[in-house]
Amino acid sequence: MALPQKTASELSVRKPETEGNVRSSLFWIVLVALALRLVVMSFLYPERADPTRDHWRCGGEAGRIARSIAQGEGFNNPLFGKTGPTAWLAPVFPYLLAGIFKVLGVYSKASAIAVLALDCLFSALTCIPIFFIANKHFGGETAVWAGWAWAFFPYGIYFSADFIWATTLTTLLMCLVFLTALHIENSSSVWHWMGFGALSGFAGLTDPVVMSVAPFLGAWAWYRLRKSGRPWLAPGLGAVLAVTLVVSPWFIRNYETFHKVIPFRSCLGLEVYFGNNQDSWHWGPPGYHPSDNESEWQQYQQLGEIAYTHKKFQEGLAFINSHRLLYVQQTLRRVVYWWTGFWSFSPRYLEEEPADPFNIVFSTGLSVMTLTGLWRMWRMDTTIAMPYLLVFLFFPVIYYLTHPEDYYRRPIDPQYVVLAGYAVASWVMERKRRLATIPPQVAVAAVE
Image (cartoon, rainbow, N blue to C red; front, top):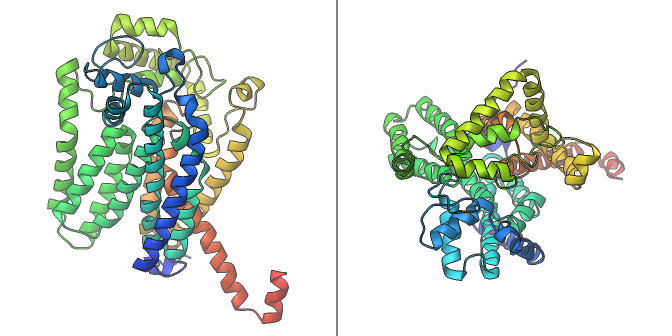
């Protein structure tokens, strides 16, 4: 028998927070989250200021491009030499890092501290959209659970305090895109929809993986708007126009530079090759990337970026075609790794990834709670569950097919936290309601 659909208010475990409570709760959540991240950063930043390999640990390819920009050489040189123009990365984070280099010095200790502190701020600010997403769907109790959970979230703390990359900014932007999509499904304002499109385009120029989800979230919101009987054509077209206007300059730059259509980044072919080769002992085996293999680096220099990544793409496809069963097995392993953190318990692997046993326990537990929250929500109201389901279905696909990294899942961690928070909060409230419906002497015995 089908369960009846319930409204958002019926899903709430408590009433939404009042404005005063929201401000007070968010202030302390964000403050604690930022303080925790900065404290951890104070112990870890020397690792990112290490001059080994010409400061490679300070941003990798992003740091190289940022140095080139800061030194007036343009968006060039993503690796170890002056190899000319690049589309290796999307432009937002390298330009942000270049601004810090310009003010505080290229690869200086102050620059490393500043960019990590900024990452910590991005991560702490992510508490705000997380709070409002949870409050919109599940009420104030879950919003507080989710906000505090993010403040103490181990992945959020570690990757903002120790990792110079676009990850924490992408996480914040992805969360804002998700929150905006939830609101525009009830708005026929062209400006609101153009804001969603512009935000999605900017997020895509920070990390293109956002565009694996944003169009589906927009399409779902558009469908909901149309179904409600409100004007829908102009808002949808406005969102598409805004995305186009935001990303077009970068697309045009790439076409004029490389005489080839490169939508966001040039290195997808390398990612295919990197994850599909003879080595399967690790999800990202060393020795297949020009940053850690002299032969690959020489090929990159000789062929140029576009020809090199195309060659790697062809090699990756050839391997897949000649090892189809292995590719299916590897893809399934990548799915398992995404949801559990498990890849292998071989001595060689554990020597490379000694923290994995602890990560497996945490990652698997988080996934179980998240899927529990999603299932509870789906049974209550499929229309509220659908945006989360779209994220979980489409965001990881590119990583299932190519290769994962431990930080690739981080941009959708907020959705995990919200649903896990809902699972916990709803269970607590259900238990309280059950205890309230039984005689007092039985309730005391149950608590004891």
